[in-house]
Structure formats: structure tokens, C-alpha cells
Length: 101
Length: 135
Image (cartoon, rainbow over all chains, first blue to last red; front, side, top):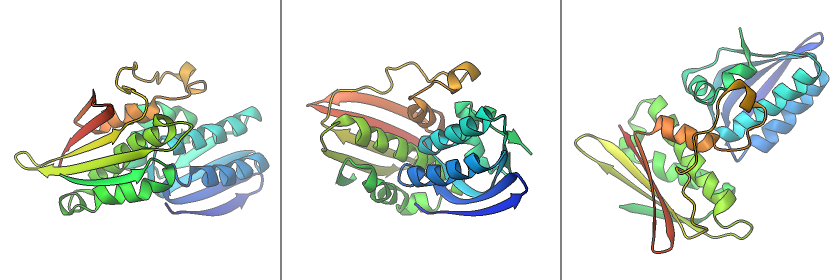
């Protein structure tokens, strides 16, 4: 499944616009990119406006990104989270990983 | 009932989700319903692909039927791998303490939460997981 990402830098913080789907077929690739960004910045904002879908494979990715940021006291922010993605985060308790802005 | 047989590998996920979502009655549903069906299909199929025959590879059959009164879709997943009832486990712990340690069970939790009925049986050497969602 497809996934596009745009990276915006604000000094030591980064914002990534996620677009499309995160599922079992592309989660490893998405994970690599997100972890690379998380390793280079203090805080990371995920703009989920155009993220339509995330499965448990994507939740694992979010968890690893959270851990990478948390390790250095960084924060994982989320904004514009849509209904379908929010439902998945809520059912699984994964809303706790994010600060919603 | 229409069916699709593929080898149970993650690379066949798109073929399986397309098989279900391209049904006209489902394509006509609200987007959120389609995404919930996509999610349930992915979680069940990926579980089969990951565990049923591990470390070997085997087939998975997906059957899909839309029924009337009330309008609903019934999807069955069949494999002849190790007998495994994913519904027999306790629901995944979603507490804060468990969040960082948990290694599984989230997929089936999502299936239970988004579908109206989920059932498992083991018949003639096959795991059969059936999900039902009202449309």
C-alpha cells in the first residue's frame, strides 16, 4: 500500500505529513523512515490529516518511534488525526503515545 | 459463496483486501465501514501469514458473501495450519503499563471491536475464522 511523507524542519523539531495507509506490507519501510527522522530531531509531530488507515503493524511503528523520542526526553505529537486512525489508537490504548495538538 | 485461495504470505494482502472490498455492496458503503473491513481482513490474514504454517508456507482461503435482511457481509478465513483459536486468548491488555511490553493480541482486539460477530471453529483439519459485519 502507498505511503507518502513530507518532512518540514523547525530547528531541532520535525513535522512529518503522513499520507495514505500504513499496513503490514509497507510498515517496515515506513518504520525505517520515521525512526531515521526520530533519531535526528528532538521532537516529532505527525500530521495525520491524510493518513487514512493504520493497522496493528503501523501501531508497532508508532511505538518504536515513541520509544526513540522518549529515550532522549522528546515528545511525539499528533495533529489532524482522522476518525478511522483515532478509532484504532483508542481501542488499543495507543492514544497514550501521542500528545494531540 | 465467492472464494479466493492464495499462499498465506503478507505480500498477498492487497489481493485479499481487494477481493473483499471490490464487492459492489461494500464499495457502496461509507468509507469508515470499508476501512474497518480492511482492518479486520488485514489483521486476520496477516495472523495466518505469520503463524499458521510458520516456518513453512501454505495456502489460505478467503470466502466472502453478502446477505440481505439485514444487509451484512460474512467473511471466512480458512487455513490448514496448526490448530489455533485466536479468540481463546484473553483480550490484549491496553493499560499504560502493558503498552510498552505487549507483543501481540492487538490485531484480534481490533477485529473484535470493529466487527459485529467473530467466531472460530476447527473442522476437518482446518482453522475457520468467520467475521460478520452489518453494512
